[in-house]
Length: 112
Length: 110
Image 1 (tube, each protein chain N blue to C red):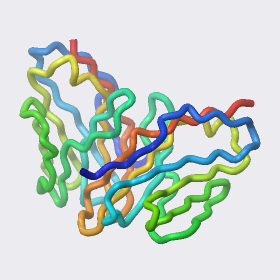
Image 2: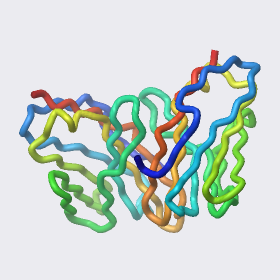
Image 3: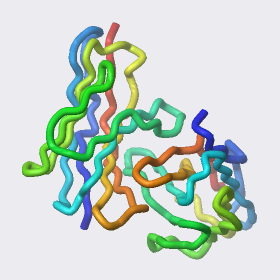
């Protein structure tokens, strides 16, 4: 069974702090990894994608991938109240181009 | 907006009704998806179409019937739904690695 696990939270951080969101996956055949942000009542919005081990930075966001340990994380620096949302982790298996597996999401609250 | 539109945005229907959800993508993508999102549960993949051909049916009950007339349009036909089918139904499209979601249809079955 392909599983993507996330802590449901809520994760509360003060404004300006670093928020760290984690995701583990069960299938070693997972090849592509994605972070989506979903505001309440809205649809998921792609933030980051990462395909190889290491870090990938985009503005205040850094995605980290460790395939040996089967985890992917998202760091949000200088967290803002507008970052308060649910963050979904998704993976795609190699060879299954059109099938994505999602975690249930981590709710982040950034307190002013 | 992401270039994926869905109508209607909200729908209330009785268990004996028949209704259809519509999705349209303006991104030139070749794959389209239906997902169901219930509270506190992961996104559930329902159907995948690639170049108008259905490539995934994730054990979805027959009361949900998809239709993909071309690569830009996707429908989900609903009939004799149950209250537990109440959820947010999301359409997405993708080209290679990246999926883009529509705004969703919030469905309430009474």
